[in-house]
Length: 106
View 1 (cartoon, rainbow, N blue to C red):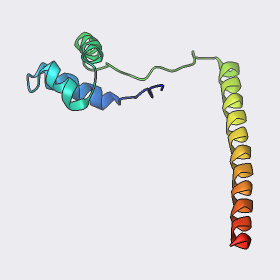
View 2 (cartoon, one colour):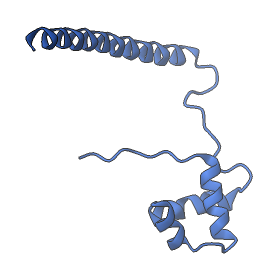
View 3 (tube, one colour):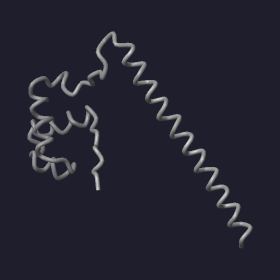
View 4 (cartoon, one colour):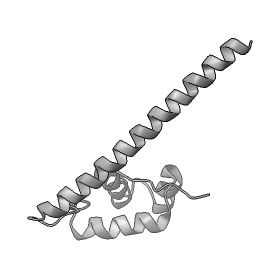
């Protein structure tokens, strides 16, 4: 079974780091309370200590001026969404058909 990757917001990461830095909680307490690995909290603290103001800032996936790369990524996302919609429509049709058949067999 594959674990789903969790994403934590910038504000949450800063909150956890500030609680530890201000000695409100120990790293172990924060780890248990928020169900986060202590290694991950250590990484957050390292980043937070380097630059508390600008830490955990969102980094763009695309370098500036790469419109072609952005277009390809958007086209791929559109293709996936279109395929998902088609699959869902087919599943909906099958479910309706099965529901109709059950009504007439009872």
